[in-house]
Image (cartoon, each protein chain N blue to C red):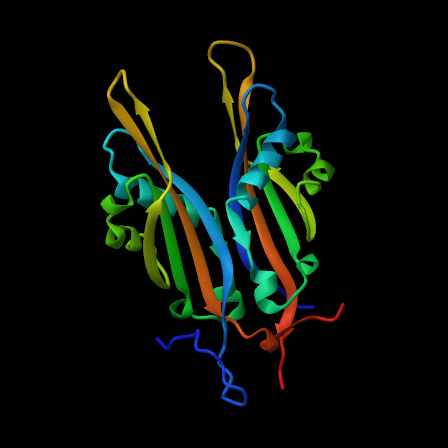
Length: 137
Length: 117
C-alpha cells in the first residue's frame, strides 16, 4: 500500500489525503484471569460492534484502503499481546498500540483483581471530498 | 435526490424499575451515539447539519414511546424516529412489574452524489 501521508509539492500530482471517518470506543474486562489481552480483545469487539461503516458498500470504497489505528489502555501495557488484538479486526490494515490506562479493580480481602481495558479504534480512509457533493434540494 | 447511507450505529438502553419506554429508548440512542465519534461529514466536506439521521427503536410497547422527546437527544443533524415492536421486557420474579430493554439503530445518511466532470 502506498503511503498516503506524503506531503504535497505545489504543482505535483494530487494525492488523496487520508481522513478519519470514525472513532469507535469500547471497554472490556477479564474478571478472574488477569489476562490483559483477553480484556483488550473484548474491548475491541465492544468498540467495533456499536457501529457498521456501510459507506464501503453504498459509496463503492474498498475495505483494503482503510487503515485502522487501535489504541488499548491497560494498567500493564507491556503484558499486552498486540498481534492477538490486531487479529480481532476483520477489515483494513490494523496497527495496535498499548498505552498505560484502563483500570484494575483489586479486592485485597479476596486477593482478586478484575482488569478493565479501553479500546479506541480509529478508521482512516483516503477520501477526496471534491469527488462528492450534496444533492440539490 | 440520492440518499446514501454511510454509517449505522447500534445501542441498548434499559429502564430497570420505572417501566419508562421513552427513557430506555433515549438511553439506547445515547449508547449508540456515544460509543462512536463520526467524522464522515468532515471527510466529505459537508456541514454536519446535512446528516440525515433515521432512528429505529425496538421495544415491547411501541405506543408508549414519546418520539418527540427522543429527537432532543440529538445534538445536530436531521433526526426522525420510528418505533417497532421489539426489545425485551423481563418480568420481575420477586415483585410486581418488569424491566424494560430498548434496542436502537441510528442510521446516518447524506443526500449526496458523485461530482462528475
